[in-house]
Amino acid sequence: MDVAVGLCCRLCLVPKIPGDPQEGAAGVSAMSGNRVHLHLISDATGETLHSLARACVAQFEGLTFVQHRWPLIRSRFQLDRVLAGIEAEPGPVLYTLTDRSLRAELKTFCDRLGLPAVSVLDPTLEMLANYVGRRIAGKPGRQYVLDADYFRRIDAMHYVLAHDDGQGEEGLLEADVVLVGVSRSSKTPTCFYLANRGIKAANVPLVPNLPPPAALDRVKCPVIGLTLAPDALIEIRRHRLRMIGPGSYHVCESSYIDPEAVKAELLAAKRLCAQRGWPMVDVTRRSIEETATTVLQLMESWHSRRAEPVPPTGPSP
Image 1 (tube, helix red, strand yellow):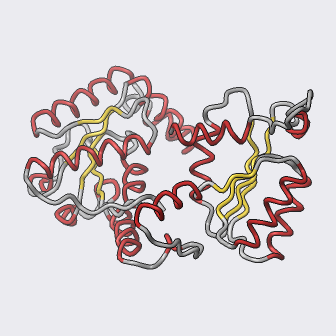
Image 2 (image 1 turned 120 degrees about the vertical axis):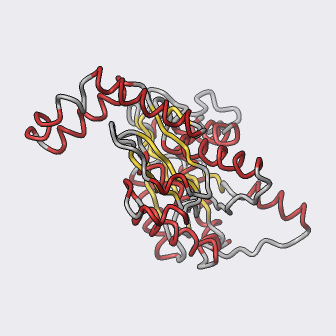
Image 3 (image 1 turned 180 degrees about the vertical axis):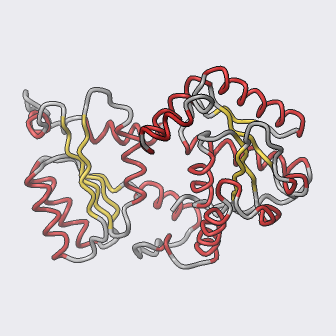
């Protein structure tokens, strides 16, 4: 995070011109009120830039960053379209281009407009190349090859689809992790995020007055409970009912969003997890990414206690 924040500061601070009493004026004039145009240029999918930019812009309150994503830029013709877009809406530029001629053209263009442009991977690539004593391949999109890691993620995604919300009970024995929790406790989105890391994650709802599936007694993977504060859960459920329609809202109002019933439901889920020795994660103030990271840590701890290898995981694509 410190690296990302430092990079964003370099981009958003106005470029300084030595000896200029109005240093940085060009950068200020390129901003429209509190709007900042940020151009993300990549010769691959641009997901690396998007993740980095998201981490950076989150550190600036009161500003609206308009992100212009330019993926798969691999020719001079494609770059010309990007340059026209930058000139029309000037702003800082982040790029991951491996073609030297395209990089030089982009840098010259940005210098002429007085706009900062940073090749975000260069420092890390140069450090690694110096350390290992190897040359950089300089081939775009090499992280997206169809290798074993890729197919493991695809397989995990199919697994999540087949074992969402208690489906395919017998298939739980193939899971890398099982998430349990009351309705609307973010089990499904967390499982999909884990699938992007190659983890086969099933999720099972804990329903009031119903025992959990018997297959949970036979799984050979960690079972982890998700919980949240009653008020937060009620608000999420109310929103869900509004999305479904007024009729469903009236039918479910008695127990689904009744404060006392919700508290009792959450308490019963916590007691069940405590009885079974299943750790719980409070997702009240956590993003899906943070919840998934905590789940991965609990999985590692579970396997470590058993001296077993942890299922291989890769970065989110």
